[in-house]
Amino acid sequence: MTELQAFLDPVDGPNVSGTELRNDLRFHALEQALEVASNASRAEAARNGTTVQIDWEAILGDCRTLAATGRDLRLLVIVARALMGTGGLAGLAEGLGLLRETVARFWDSVHPELRPAATKAEAAIRRVNAIRQIESAENGLLCDLNYAVLLSARMFGQATGADLAKASIPWATAEAEGPSGLGEKERAAAQEAFNQTVARVTGICRATAAEQPEVYAEVLDGAGAALHALASLEAALDAHVAENGIGVRFERLAKILTRIEATLKANRPAEAAAAPPPAAAPAAPAPAAAGPPEVSMNGTAQAAPPAAPAAAAPAAAMPGAFPSRITSRDEVIRCLDLVIDFYERTEPSSPIPHLAQRMRKMVPMNFLQLMEEIAPSGMKEFRSIAGVLDDKK
Image (cartoon, rainbow, N blue to C red):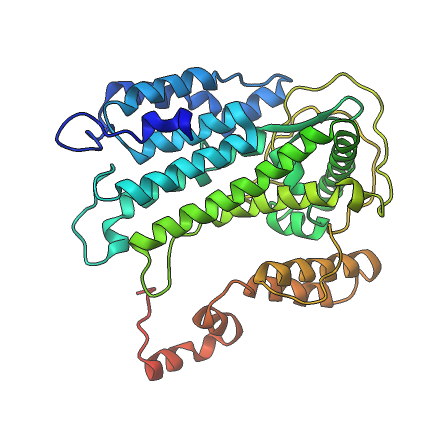
């Protein structure tokens, strides 16, 4: 993190973190320069067959200049975005590491300031909200990751972060996370697009792993490093804001990174050798950077960019072998996804996938949420007996 030392050095003046940048005109100019990186701008460019060009090196230089005035978490989130823009997933890991280091070393002085409040979490709400911009799919780090080209192969085109994430899940999951109320034709078109993306991404991964193994290993290592850095950031925040075992979790970013890593692991040579080869796509010029999937990771419909055409293929199965022992809620969800996918393919009239979908929804719930889901009519009496306040009032 030597090249990032400027963001960790003490700022001249009575406060080692300098002044807050919220009202600094240079910071506002930086935010305006990033408006072109919004999901809306990128989706519009994709529809026109172009891509949005962002000078991340210049953004990073402007951030270094501002860092001499104040140590502000809002600025450091932009730094993390710029580092990913210049260094891919490894750069993302560096950016998250910088946020973690700042939280750990400068919590007493970093901006935005803590506010008087009854709890640690309430006092730090502005800081937590500033960091949560890493999960913004509209104009934040998650949006950047969705559109970032992480792999490319001559025969198949390019794969973005959103493409790689999509390729690790079955159609049932993608559909559940996508827009509701689709007609039969719309649903069929969405599933066809999903199948083509999975086939294309599988081809890109296997071609890159075979022809450029060092590049593939670098991207895979970067995904793992980013996940580790994100967990370390959560732990650093927990030390200052966690109460009653409840801390800050960046679940949306963790989900897409986990899925990216799963796709990359599943298509390493050893794992891919046991799987059938992907349908080859016709040779075509490398397309412009692809956008997020037609069914996005955050459940909103996104415009899909031009991509190298691929032959239709069945929805890919979940990567990795079926676990002999379940050790986490994430694995519970993966297994339920497999159940749903099996019945949708083999017994579409069965009620089991509908029950499994409901079970999947309940996996992350706490006890009270489960009670409300299973027996809502008895919740009023239960709350009265247990002395639990109804937070809906």
